[in-house]
Image (cartoon, rainbow, N blue to C red; front, top):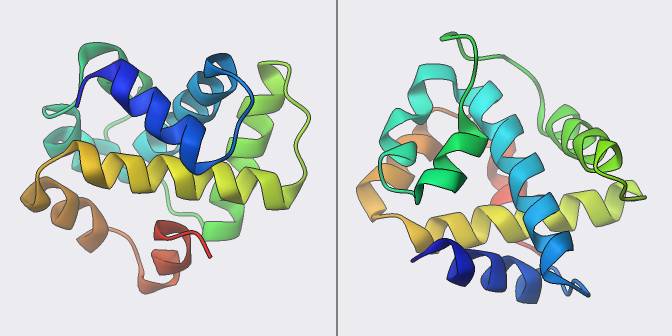
Length: 129
């Protein structure tokens, strides 16, 4: 899946009004995911188009440990820095839409590797609903 398909998928899944909102949601979510996974994101970034992989680059090698609720808060804050005004429910929907799109964009082995690095409590972020 190329980046345009990815953004289109995010836009549709999160019921966003523009491509710019989809890009902001994707960049924020991928950035926080990169922080959460540290070096563990390598299998995923190898499968993504360059600009999406760049969004996941973490300056440190170590994975940061934080809860799913903190993950959503970090994404919400990252989107706010880009000019969006989100409540927690909207931020959670953005995270879920990006993660669902990400699952479709990469091969199953890379996706399973990512999921295995996250605690079971993250399961609620993998599917909207």
